[in-house]
Length: 393
Image (cartoon, rainbow, N blue to C red):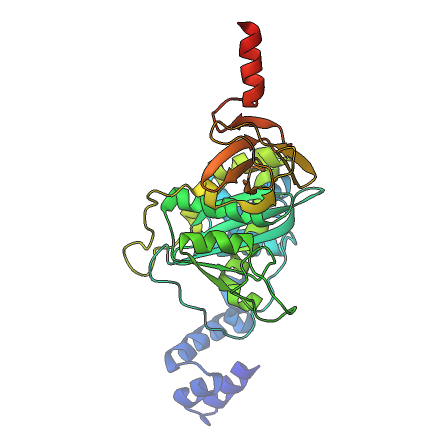
């Protein structure tokens, strides 16, 4: 209708071609093309012929159907980025990430993401790997019907995961295990960053500041190794690890389901052998600066430091009580008995036990309290050993 008005005004010489073109918002040359089409075919000639044409870039319908069927049958519940990696790597997909996302959203298979909040400034990463280590746990239904804790120990500079495993419940032993696996893999690090969990810190007042003078079992071990502990006072302070666990919760359950894993032992084997190497290759970033703050471990027995240590007084029968168990101290060649002596019980991440008198190990035990070996390396008390040898002679 506007073209007819401009065309009539031009025909009546009330407007020039330049003025009529300006009225339509086109250039003078385009207006002349419109005149030719209008005089040849009327208003039908002005319709854009591309409207009736199918774009040569449009994907075939069967390709869209295959994509949707693949997602429904094998990857239902996966986030788009995770699915797109498999779509490209395992299924030879050639389409862009945006195309895949829009097809899945259009089919109602994935939800449209919420609008992002206001801009926040991210805390800069540490310049060197090994300068700060994060450790945190996440309780989640990683496999259907079972809620486990995932304990992850990662580098602040690179986001590389050095240790990650499932346990029934997060605690001192699981945290010590994560630190030990990290040190064995890379060496001693400078600082340790965590939340204010009771196994990390003693907090006199709920929600208040931690007391760095009163050490927990974990704090004692870090102090022994010369590692500085840094508490976090808000979830925002742990933003990097919080986002990290969000990524894991959107990927790991699907990976475990795809592999058919439902028990914790198989899940931990899958993590160490397959998942973490692939995850680190995808999400690790180079450190801001070249070099490393890790230092080698020299002359340190990590097993005897990264454990729970508690003092007990030996009873008159050369036994001590520990966590509902009675641990019998075998006879020792350097001392007649240990009655009323102060000894130290070591509980390791695998829940095995040992008794120390000063620097000397007197005996080791299984998690149930059964004697494994005494100070002489025998698997039974020395008195029983001598009696058995005498009888045999």
